[in-house]
Amino acid sequence: MRHSGGIEMTDHIAGLRISHVVQPIARPVSDAKVATGRQVPLAAVDMVFAEITDEDGTTGTGFTYTLRAGGTALQALAEEIAPMVIGARGADVQRIWEMLGWRTNSLGACGAAFHVLAAFDTALWDLKARRAKLPLAQLLGSFRDGVRVYNSGGQYLQASIDEMSQAARDSVARGIGGIKMKVGQPDWREDIRRIEAVRDAIGPDVALMIDANQQWSRAEALAFCRRVDGMGLEFIEEPLDARDHAGHGALAAQLVTPVATGEMLASYDEHAALIAAGGARVLQADCPRIGGVTPMLRVMELARSQRVALAPHFVMEQHLPLVAAFPTEGWVEHFDWLEPLFNERLEIRDGRMWVPDRPGFGLTMSDTAREHTKRSVTLRDSPEGGD
Image 1 (cartoon, helix red, strand yellow):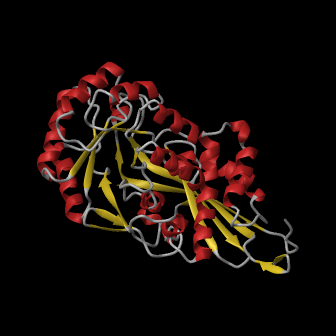
Image 2 (image 1 turned 45 degrees about the vertical axis):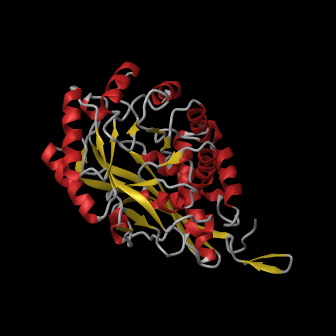
Image 3 (image 1 turned 30 degrees about the vertical axis):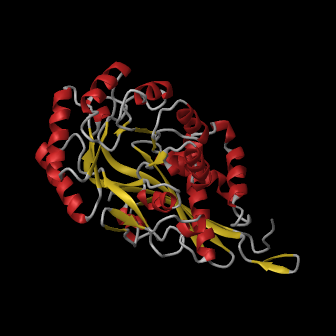
């Protein structure tokens, strides 16, 4: 128990646990990068969880993730810097982010370092909201109780038209409000056939998005996007290399359909460069990839000031309260891949995902998460404490 000015302080961090969890995907999925031989099918998601406990016994849970490679490296780096967090005040979230950011600065202000920072940062925000007995969305200043939700899981390139169409119908029947499908086939005509089939399956009133996963050159992107520009799509995602900001800006200026991108960017500065180039009318920032809630709030303010829409990539578990706290309507992306790792489920109905009324993110790790843990390390404060 610390004391400050005669007041007992119980929010200092007394312990934490870092866990590397590997969650398999029931059916491996393929996008355009797999179709062209640049990637292998995605079969699992590597997660690093941080569970941070203060002196009062309150625990905040956060996580980060990586796809296909890097989980062991993220766990090792998290273990290396974790002792810095012990003894710090849990409420000093931004201060701790800066402290960890400078410790990992030699790795670059992005990439693996920011992935690891995200695990600690999201756990600290969860802890802060739990201490306040508020859902994170309310702590941040919520604008709405439910966020529009679209599904991406059933419309990958390995799925046949029949499989894809049925998955889309099932999602709509469940209450999901939009469907996103993968494109980028070697023959663009096949992409058009698949788009038309999904549109027929879901009807004219459900939002439809397409995702090329950085597949095309500038010329190819312009040709394809012009072909689909009159099809009423909600957005066209990643038509170009993720860091071709100028190319995305030039393409977006020639289309009626909004261009969406940003999921692969790994810092505030990269998002600022993308927006300055006019490369995204829909920003798909990824909270774990840019370092957690702390930098995500800065990106959200940038998007707000430039009148850019928000539709974060993946991890609906973290993005739901953030989009609920964004002034204008956005989207969250539904994947059920991570659901087994949590005891709770997020409610979907009427085209929206609803913010839970539980404190923090409203999620706790399940027995399945413990079973899928490859390595876990626990640290504790010394009995004497000390700042």
